[in-house]
Image 1 (cartoon, rainbow over the protein chains, first blue to last red):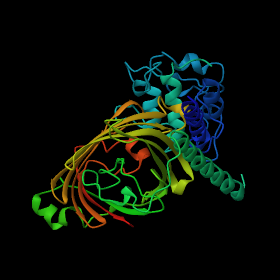
Image 2: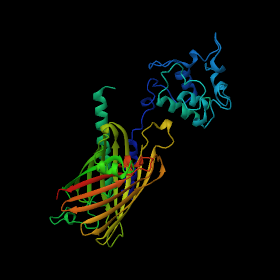
Image 3: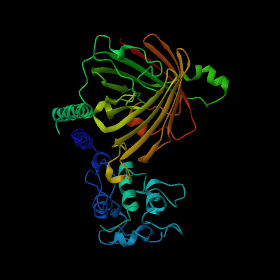
Image 4: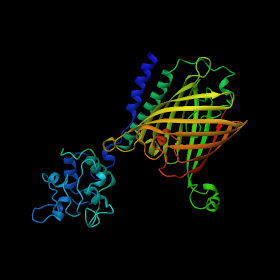
Length: 148
Length: 284
């Protein structure tokens, strides 16, 4: 019995040794990015980052201009503009489909899927979101695209 | 974090892992008797002549204070690329690059071995194995406890500890059969926030059949039965020749993995097969 207890304790200890990677290891220029919508809003939509990527709200705002494809990504409005909403740029596409990042048009536009209309975002050849930043956005969508 | 602090943290993690692995193995069995001068572990085990199948460990014991070395080569040219003439022109892949592994194991006490395996993608695996039950009158099977830990980037990143059992049954001097359930933690090298599974459970199966007095056929497969399972199941076939303390093995496999963490990440998700070889040497 003592042997099995020791084995169990040691098993748990070995599990504790495992060093899960930090999210900041993959999110590159936005180390504070997490999988919540508020974090994506603050870090991606509303802010530029040190890589030179421009904030989405530089164009996607209705403050003093007409937003491209009628999409406003400013804080407080972006969630309703994205989740479950049809794209005005591509008929039949939905910008964010909760649980389905592969078919969400937002992801397609950010990753340059072959069936997008127009250019990849951010426009003018980037800099684009990194693979790690995209993984975070994809995870938020696959987790249900909550307004959290 | 300062580089010195990182180095200290890595060193402490490693020492902790080795300490824990050893304590598991020692705790799992009664204290073994001192090895006598005529240690039977020094004898050739005809059914189980080496410490690995193709990649999976066997239950062969390293004699106390003895050691063994192994080099693995997995050529990266798919055997199915181009015509047979192209393949022959590349000497069946030998002209291509290879993933190379170097391994050393040491018997620290009777029925207990430790070692390391480094592959040329800069993964280092440390392992420990302890026999807890021997095939004989009391048991139809030999069972060894296995503990390993992989670290990528020269054991600086992505640590994947694993615990498992190596279960074997030998049939006279003709064959040995293996079943190896192994749990691998942190088999996914991405942060847990963006993934579904961070563990894998492997169920290695394999056999070694003695087809001539010193020639063996080895087969193994390492399916992931639950958890993170990218790519496809790694399968390997080996043809071996034993010569004194050496074992020469020619391998055909669908993947390059030779550590437990690499096996958990699977073979490449293609129909490609690759040539390779392994050479092991016992220093006793």
